[in-house]
Image (cartoon, helix red, strand yellow):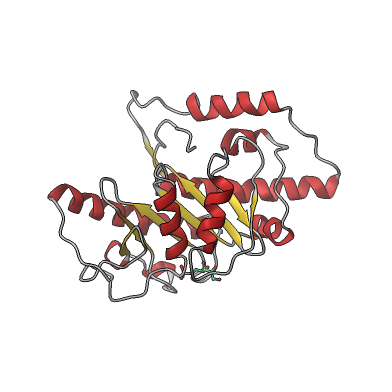
Length: 253
Ligand SMILES: O=C(CO)[C@@H](O)[C@H](O)COP(=O)(O)O
């Protein structure tokens, strides 16, 4: 365990990240991506070598900003901080490895969502056969290696698969989904959309052979969705029942 004292700006960033990570866990249950205490969300603290992650095995309806766990980028819990009396998520080493090796990533999510995990169990990438996949993932959702939980081997598999890949989601073989994003909300969106397209493509395959989309069309769809879709940053944002409108999308490399 390490301890720390920070500037008022970093303290504020820590508090804001705790709020965001705690509330985003409710999106995983809202969209049916997790059961019991499975899955987890983490968020990098802007301006600091820190991230916030859920406590291990704690019921989703008990998660609050103050019981999220603050860690350094080696996955060490910061002693004396709120929540530090509990053990962090069992995937903390994986999340930490991603943050250390993908500096552009601001959020990481893990689920065992049903359809995406069924594809992971077969070790098969989800082919890009619907425009929603081109929009969100810029192509297929790839498969990462089988890796046992508990050290950074899952994180190594996530980084090895996604670094330089347009997809923000990876199907870790025989395990489940890991997603990355520019922040925790973006990573949660990737997890929601990964399960949605996994279900659609699965159903399509039950009816017959889905038709591929030409690469140039995938590129055009991805570019439009990442750079044109939604509201410009300059326009006033309207909040919605689902929270503030998503900011203009930027591609996570
Ligand atoms: O995949 C696993 C367990 O096999 C974990 O990711 C759990 O799904 C969530 O663990 P905690 O975050 O509660 O420790």
